[in-house]
Every structure is written in C-alpha cells, then in structure tokens.
Image (tube, rainbow, N blue to C red; front, side, top):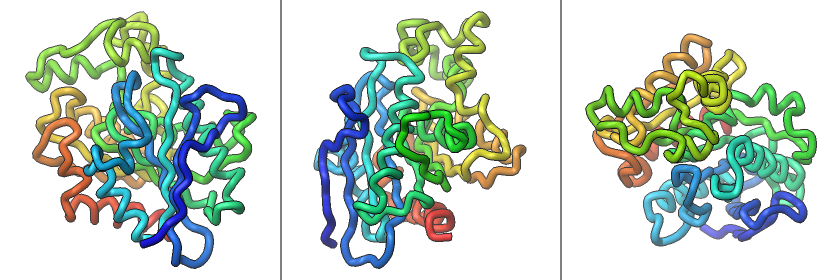
Length: 283
C-alpha cells in the first residue's frame, strides 16, 4: 500500500508546539476518504502522536495498518499536556484538530462528514469526551475551529470515563488506590482532587459519563479485565449509561491489563474494531 504521509502539521495558527498532527492518506481508493483520528494516552502528562506509527509502538502501528488498508485516512494528534495547561485545553486541542480536518478536507481528499475518533487510556477519555459532547461542538462550542466534522463513531481503549470514581474503582477491584489526590494524573488534569465531594462538579464536567445523552456518538469500548490502572468498571459504567440513552454501544472485555498489545495486534480484536468502524464510516 502506498500513501501520502504528512508530519507535524500545525492545526492552530501560531499555536503551541504541541498543537500539531500527522496525516496519512492511502492511495488507490476512489472518492473522499473517511478519517480516523487517533488520540494518544499517557496520563494526560506525557505521550506522543508518534506511537501511532513508530516501530517502538508496533501495537498501535498494527491497528493503523489495517485502517489504512481499508482505505481510511488516519490523523494522529498531539495536544497540550497537563504541565502546560489543565483541562479543557486537551479537549479544545482535539476539537481544533478536528476543525483543521474539516478545513483541509477538500485539499487532502478527506470526508469531513465521516470521522471517527479513537484513543487509549487518557486518549480514550478524550475520545469519549468528544463523542459525548459532540452536540455541543456541532452547535458551535469551538468558535475558531475552522469548521466542524461529523463524528460518527468513537473507539475507546481502556479509557477513563468517570474521574470522580477512578480511585474508588481501583479499590473495589482490589488494586489499591494507586496515585490519588491532587498530585495524581487526574488531579493534575483538573487542578483538584477529583475524589473530594467539593470537586464533584469539576470532575463531572470533565467526565464523559456525566455528558451521556441520546446525542452521543456510537461507541465501542475495549477494556482489560485485569486492568488495575483504569479498572474495567469505568467502561462498563459508561456503556450502561450510553445504552440507557439509546446510543449504539459495544463493550469488549479482554483477559489482560492496561495497555496490553493484544488490543491492537490480535486479529479478532482488530476485526471487531474494523467491523464497528465500518458500519459507521461506510454507512
């Protein structure tokens, strides 16, 4: 397969050095390509869009390869981390990247009406947040985004959906508290300890679970049953809420822990993601 691969494209004019993306458009497929946007994990404090394609990230690269073979363009996004700014900076950056895709769709042969968002861990949280807030975004939440893509599907790999109860879920799973408090990754994201009752409103505002409505995007959630960093209760809880709201939702629980390469390399799991995305990107 041949493809046009563009690296380090700024999606915000005169923006922060982190506000860049990579775009790959496969050759040999007629018409405007559906787009899959990848959001990297790393506890909102580290990580890079480069894992999507690097040899050091063979697990992610394996998934990217099957998406490109399907004829879908891929975008991988960097965003401001929590040492630069707390939320909503990360969500605003992803939305600005989606605006860039919309604004440049004709130039690169992309279909801005058929865009899916996927992410792992912290990136799964942001992907879910894009999906559960899509109605707000599509009615103009981000005024300077350059336009709005139509988000037709979300895929979250072991993503955080409920910041307020993340530590409690670890304890309930027999994993201990792990990092907690204001100095934890989620605390740095919010600027408060999300487990405190006084922080509930702040934590909920940044939690996909609290934004679930019938307008949310169809969602596929992959999660490891032995995940002690982000227990699978996070995906099971948001899936139940999405289903109650009438949103097409699937949950795949896998024997494995957090960030197990099997999520991306196992043919059956790859096919599950392809089937789900295909139903929505090729409808």
